[in-house]
Length: 354
Image (cartoon, rainbow, N blue to C red; front, side):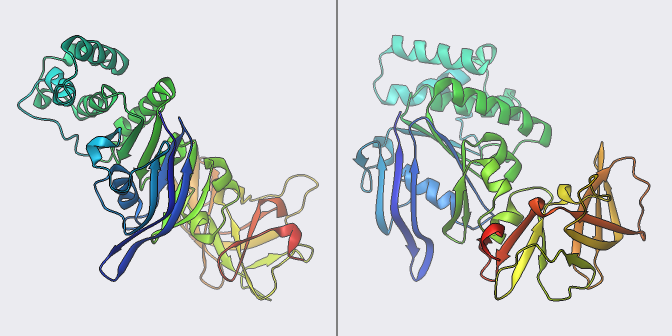
């Protein structure tokens, strides 16, 4: 196992800067997830760690070793791809053994590692099958097994679950997290799925346009997003953002709630909007919403509506609600549920902007 360090890493394609001075420290044994929208640079970062993409500037260290010019095969990492990358003409056993044979690993050691990986991943009964005889989830287990048998310093995952259906993705998320905890191997995982990211990560790294927006635990990023980008990317549905004004149409903010000078954006998560205030705790934020959409998602419903100025607002209610399309509803929240962002989109401490 080993820590991974990125020091001011840059990547340019001609005049286009894809990665813009990224620095990141990943601890030994940590599970870090790089998350962000398509095209933000997260997969490029992973491929640079793997050595599949050269870097334009900065340094990458795996353990104490600078690996800028080290070939991928010599970096002591194992990568799991979304397309499995299994050899179709080989059995599962042969796929697992292939990389070890190329490294002249003794046959007895190969057998030991394959048996251990197969037992860990519960694929012992599939060792003599070809990939075409396996389901998508079973193939992904084999791809992970091929990484495990190498006993690398780090695992790199490039959106490994994107080809699976929703139910299987949920099962495999749990499996990957269990496996990483059992092995204790440093892991870097790339996904655009924020649910996947929140479930798996010890720490999340939100990437946007080639830069890191915020690093922290899933709960830290959810409760205290550093920017409006993080606020709307982490959480489903996204945080409601309302541009501040002296007399905003359709909503109000109590006078005692601090506002940043020079303008602000108010943020409030859908689950923090209530249709009635808690006893003895009046609303500090209040809004009147005309409902124009209802999503029943089991025990709760998501209500979509608009304020008087046309701003969209989403809030959650019980799945048994009688509120329907066309209804006007007053919702609100207390000050401790509010998020305040300055005009530059960065988080402002409510206690320090008065």
